[in-house]
Image 1: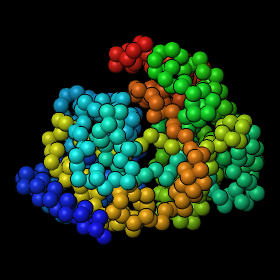
Image 2: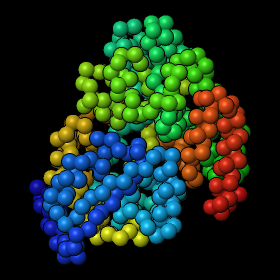
Image 3: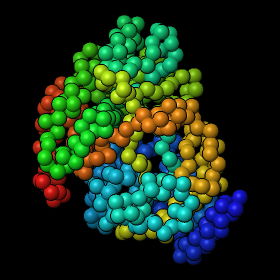
Image 4: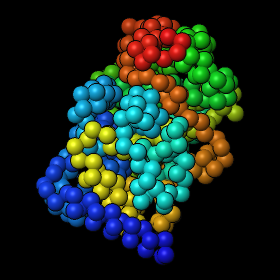
Length: 427
């Protein structure tokens, strides 16, 4: 209680100070990609925004959503022209690499909420300062989301190798169940396969590979495991394990697809399991690591970099109000509101909050993988340039326009151009 009281005193002081500067009516803009516009995201959650606006009626919050493929370029352009939104949602390492966070974002290290973080180190940038705000400690991950009832009906178990995965898909297909739903109209969805697997390759098989790639010493197409990863995925398409319309179907259609009972699995993260639990509780979903290897020991859950952080650009128009939003959403009573909503359960990174009962999927991931060290960081976290072109090349592969090797060769060329444009050594 003493810690909570201390936090409340700090909050009142900050709120009073900022409110004095913010008596005028303002519109606070929060901008991020479509992938973050999910009910479980507390920054885009309408109930949280409504609560903030009720407390500060002179501040209107305007949420701006960017199509995933346009996010990086849109934000880079706004930062370059000096017209960014007041708050930007972006992944931490990507913001450091792609948005030059240490140069373009406000240093938040001295904010009152920092002293109440359980693990401040996860938010620190290479210079030791904090530029991004995040409420949670990760208890999630990416893998294969699957319908447990369908698996039980056909006496299937979560596969641990690529060969076992193929057998599961064959059994499902033979019983007129489409093994995998592909929402690949959205470019960020398929890339869960390679980014997860390549992260494991870097951690378990080829230490330092991304240091060499980023230094221009090794080409992407020269890494056999990278081509094998895409070849195995391509094999899944050729065998008809995905729906034929996968390039025109998007993430928004996934809940209906699973509710139909016609699909058994999807490459996705824990957030989809939670979201569907609120939309259709009758669907019993869980998750297992992507079984793309022959060695079961490589069966680990992939986690993103510290994702979905809020940043305040130095050239934002309403920095004081943006800080007020961060302070408001970090308060114990606000976090308690979040955790009372089953769709928003997360493990708070704040000392002054109770440890909640996690959603079953997050409890499973946390205990079976996070606590036991059976996790790896996705490959995207180590790449220093925008990867949207690579994600589009994946779509070309899915459509039969490019081979797995063609994808990597094309990316080698584009990667070199992007690294050279950033004046990176070795390019």
